[in-house]
Image (tube, rainbow, N blue to C red; front, top):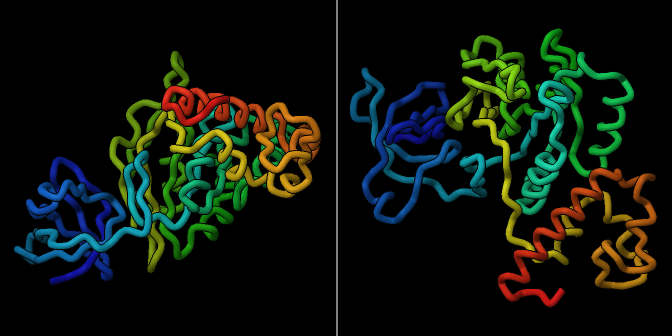
Length: 298
């Protein structure tokens, strides 16, 4: 038996790359369906080679996952790079904040990549960097046209398995093409009418770069459900709140309405106003969910 990593799954076939960069087309054993286990891109597997010449095999075992994302559906992620465009389409900060929240809950380090910086002013770029540096590992402004900023992104990805995520049309595939020259990707355009991407990535796919460096290119998305949290737990996942939580007048401060809230005192100073607006919207949504489930009296 041999070992490898699933890089793509389409129509019941799973493509497994080995340490020497050979790719095998595999089927999964029926026992996985019986146990309701779905192989995912990123899964480390044990497989049997049925035909070496045609590179065909069977997946016999899925090694225990260290983590799993539902959307995009991938496994064994070291870090996440969420790609957002400043213009065309404009930045959906609510969607970005939801994704960052999910990564915080899953304890997956996250980076933000700002694309299409050639269409934005220096002030716009600086404002977004200031807003997201306190709540992510790093913010990378990138110009996909001239390649500015690509070197820094490539360095952050080295030796890690990174999931790229973001809405359609923001430049994920173009970014991958810059990071991995020679990789053939289906690059999508942005519809002038809808300002959304079209003809872009349809499946989560893992690209083997070198050594231990892998990149997931995932389908674009336009919505993101909140993780299962009680509303009062939400603030713990906003990193920029952490320095001030102990200074709030109430131990169980929700940072919404209580007097003497140190978090609210720093809004517009060290806490970005729009990030706080996202927090309030998510708090209200989680509260409605909790009330319907009978878990909250608020």
